[in-house]
Amino acid sequence: MNAEVGRRIFVGSIVAGLPLLTRAGLLAQGAATGHQHAAGPVDPVLDHLVRQIANIYNSAKAGPRGEHFRALAALLRTLAVYDRAIAVDDQVRTKLQELVDQEGRSAVLYAEPDEEGRRQALLHYGLQPGPRTQQSPVVPSHEQREAALDALLAHGITPVFDHLAATADKVAMRIDARTNHSTSVAQDADWWQGFCQELWNQYQSAQTIASPFCVVAKFFPAVMPSCAALEAGAMILLLSWAYECGLRF
Image: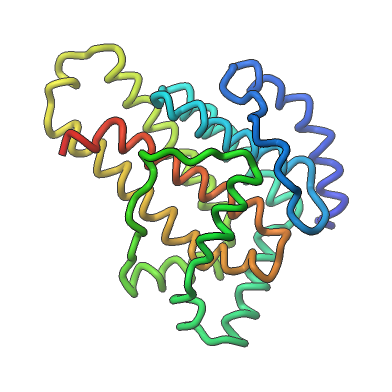
């Protein structure tokens, strides 16, 4: 599908549905909308979706709830559909392969993360980091780096958003079970260990694939919103882990 035609068709079909999420009260525009826009043309749908994900994080800082993760799952699935409509996967695969060909596979696998650029991008979309997500950087193994790069080269980024959305749905159900004061859940150490391990594993996985994916954004700004969305989604998982598991294990 032509990317511009796909974008126009998708904008028309999605904008009517976005207020349904906004009415949940989780996704009101944040105070950081005054940040300077990033260089290059702004896709209004991507900009809106990423800001909404950032606002879920800002709301969840007071304590993650099941509705935060259900809203996150809906936004991530919407982002995946829209990215497919504008051929982001094709663009990511092409640009990433060009980087591998030009710089070598190891250079892409072990590229130094642009921490300041990451921070500025998240601030630009309204995400206001809190102390509970100030964790040591994830240090994946060589095999994990290779697998992440291979997945991006083969499939692009949208399957990652779909997978992260499925994880968010699972987390929502688990938080709801805990919130409903189920005695068996509240006291079951095995349940908590499985829940916390899944949260941590999914956070690590998202951060591992974000590394080569966000390298592309340095050279191809059109990918930056999707990079920021992936980072913000990972931070919401980490926030839940910090609240639910950080003091438990």
